[in-house]
Image 1 (cartoon, rainbow, N blue to C red):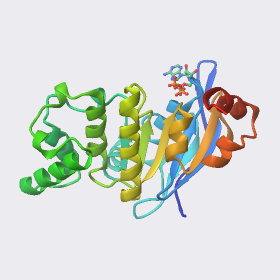
Image 2: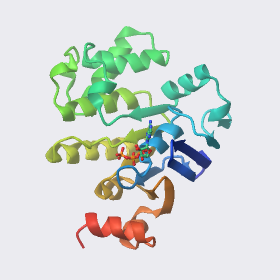
Image 3: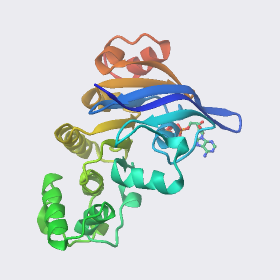
Image 4: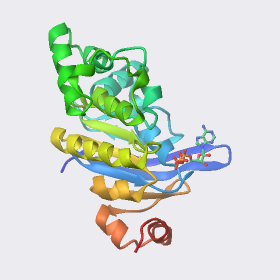
Length: 255
Ligand SMILES: Nc1ncnc2c1ncn2[C@@H]1O[C@H](COP(=O)(O)OP(=O)(O)OP(=O)(O)O)[C@@H](O)[C@H]1O
């Protein structure tokens, strides 16, 4: 598999805290990479940095998608925004904050299509309807404001609104955290089916090793801003080598 995104030597310091400590990783095309670790280990900082939402103090991020390799640090604001809305997607933990609640469900999906150049109203509406079916909200709710949608429905709408343009790379920050346990499984199942169907590379941050096991081809483990272990997910979770990973696995997964 060819590399889609490569990060080398990322560092980020907040006052005296090393949120990122010499982090290097790669994500290949169509690969699902999980970033796991305890609260405060640097997962969200890493994801936001990789996605160009915040800058590292040092290090380099190269994106090999599109027509030529580009360093994120060399892009101006407009180029980065364009990349983020065309070839990338970001699924936030808090769907309520990520969506526009005063715009219809169909409008939330259609907006992303229009940002990518779609102009034909009939086509946009039909694509939005298809995606509402795809994420099991149902096309009959296309004109409904998502204000009264449940947490699970909001997350499924955010997923539709992100994946509708078939991005090459999607960043997910704890996409099922905060949802009822019974709802989490359904959303995870949906994510798994869609990313495989669309062949989209995914970097997913989670504190839940079960999520990594279900979704990810490879997993990296973070502690104190550094990657302490990485490998195939089954390998990392079934035969952890680093004491911190062993602790994580033994305290979270029943043996
Ligand atoms: N804007 C900021 N200002 C100061 N410190 C920050 C900031 N953002 C993150 N940090 C610190 O950097 C470290 C890593 O935080 P980060 O949120 O990336 O960890 P995390 O693994 O995602 O944790 P969580 O799962 O709780 O979000 C923490 O010690 C955090 O307090």
